[in-house]
Length: 503
Image 1 (tube, rainbow, N blue to C red):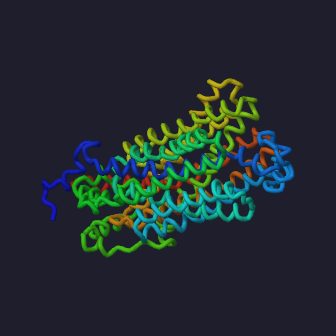
Image 2 (spheres, rainbow, N blue to C red):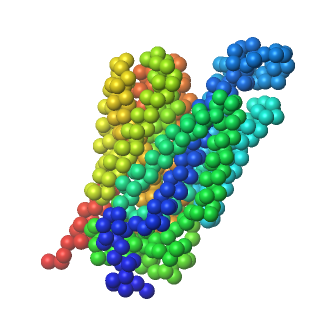
Image 3 (tube, rainbow, N blue to C red):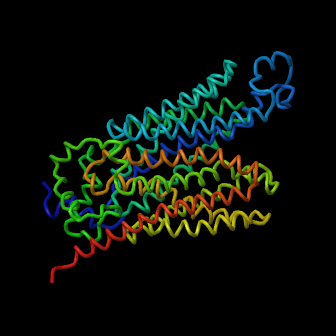
């Protein structure tokens, strides 16, 4: 039983930082670096594609290989007749990974809500590390080259890596309440960008010894990270006897309903009354994981998922194609293009944090997204006409990352947590991973389709039409957000009417 002056009662009334303990910091860092390591392995694969292509093509076409017995080397390594064929296959592996990753997200979200998420995350990280080790290191050590085997391993890797995002978002949602979720998740969502930088560093540090050592080092670090997660991560505050984030919100809401009204809530007033009655400990212990169809039917889930599919298509297209675009369009060196492309990630990190903070202050997410998407249309148009100047290009790239990467980070993290803790399922974490899997899975399908469409559009019409395609997807995402703005505004107005004193 909680007394009026107990820590659980007063926690929500403290300052922004004083509501968090060192346990919150540990959870923040562990989940941050666990997903960063998963992203690092993807980036490492991207960074060694040239070396892999050289190894898979005949030695007489590859000047980097010292030929002692040309026929022997050819017979051992000739997966493809030339580098163009090898490059196409590597692109196919990217598409295979994205589609299997998308399918896995829908499944992993459901599994995460039914099993201990620490076990699911540990299994995914360690198993994915083993798969990467077999794909890049064992096959090279044994000189075993087989296209079907590579495709099979990459399907498995996509499924295993999909366990990461739903689990880490759900765990963060358990620990961090809605009062500061926007800015906290905005900072935390930088984990993917940090993972990209870490993966590039790990791969480049050992690539001189052979691409197999890039896989070896990256997989080893990721496997070790999985062990740290197993022994160190606490998935919910209740395991330590602390109040759950949703429980803190519900306790304070009775006296400060206007201040702590959920950012994503149902329109009906009657539902909120029912919600207060399900916060008793006995009822919480009886809650069951929400079904997949039920999660899809939760208010806002489908619209945010479709909007995220459009945004992730644009966001991942920049991730995969930006260095290539800079090298081809401006004739800059590949290393310079790689370094310059980091500014897009920096813009996304800043955008997610700033926009998350604004959404916390106004207590609504969708209007912030809508304004950002409108400005993103202008930034994409401006960036498509950037002059051949690295400083100007970097500035325009950062602005574009701010307005594209920022909303993308918000939807995949803070908004997914909001959707999984809205009034219909409030007081239970059994919807968080499922909802996150639906949102990110839909987004990943869009990203996978986008990589195919970008290559077709660029080859047929040129880069300017690729940017027109990005603008179209951004506008489409904006139209998916409009109904959410209307619903959130109605909910806010209804709450204010209810909070007015009688007479």
